[in-house]
Amino acid sequence: MEESQMDKKNIDWENLGFGYVQTEKRYVSNFKDGKWDDGVLTEDANIVLNECAGVLQYAQTVFEGMKAYTTEDGRIVVFRPDLNAKRMVDSAKRLEMPPFPEERFVDAIEKVVKANAEYVPPYGSGATLYLRPYMFGSNPVIGVKPANEYQFRIFATPVGPYFKGGAKPVTICISDFDRAAPHGTGHIKAGLNYAMSLHAIVTAHANGFDENMYLDSATRTKVEETGGANFIFVTKDNKVVTPHSNTILPSITRRSLMYIAEHYLGLEVEERDVYVEELKDFAECGLCGTAAVISPVGKVVDHGKEICFPSGMEKMGPITQKLYDTLTGIQMGRIEAPEGWLKVIE
View 1 (cartoon, rainbow, N blue to C red):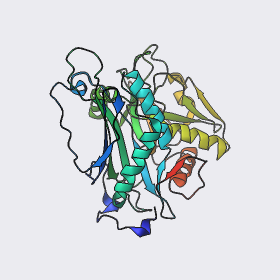
View 2 (view 1 turned 180 degrees about the vertical axis):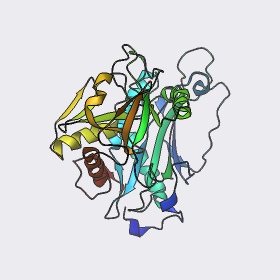
View 3 (view 1 turned 90 degrees about the vertical axis):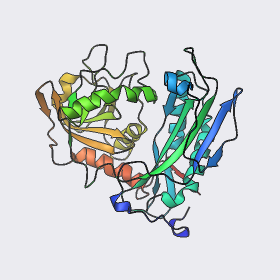
């Protein structure tokens, strides 16, 4: 879809915050009597639910997050939506929800972006169109059991860059709270995982920290993730390391960054157990996710003991910066993407 063929909304793109802006169209499909209906685009941003709906009683809900971008040559693209579709299937299965078919998911994303094309921020503004697919139990459920009716929806909202004026390294603390149990739901994108992280993040903020570092709950010796992002580390000999765990969310951004490190930057990469005692030996640290791509970490505080990364508190470390520049370059069409990474919205 050529940007020049349509008018953009009169929005101050440069000063857009990271918040909800209602757009004109969203997608809705309902699951009833064992099957998903055909789905429609609607202008109604409100959801009417019975007071006893499964989602309200037992938190039966999963979601995804992704973005549409305007590339340098004026096309509108979505980054790797097939991986979000697959991850949502995995999330749904874990919460006993009927998976929304992957090919229909990608098609629905395309419909929503096309219908809200005027809200896709222009190239160079730093802003993007954030897409939120989600699904929830919609019929009354009073006994503890899965709902038998569900709604799948996608809305779009334009968002500014996660970091205004560039990404300053953050200070994080090792949390006393556990994010996920060894055989729990840490590996899926369920609303309940984020609900339980709210008290921990408010506590961290109250203590002067930007984010939490959660450890594995079984031994509390290994690094897992933050409330909403995976970790990447860079060793002093430029190896890119990321924690391996069955209880962290498999981040699509992290997966993409590890591929870029190996295939674009020629770096050695490793997914393995990362122990707290190793933190002092790393040169760089970053948090990766859809919203910020990479947030550099300058310091980790372990119950009063400060672990400062050599990359410092002023800017991203050199390898983290290269990873960030390469991934954003691919997303914006400045650097050639691996096959299948960019879904062009025609």
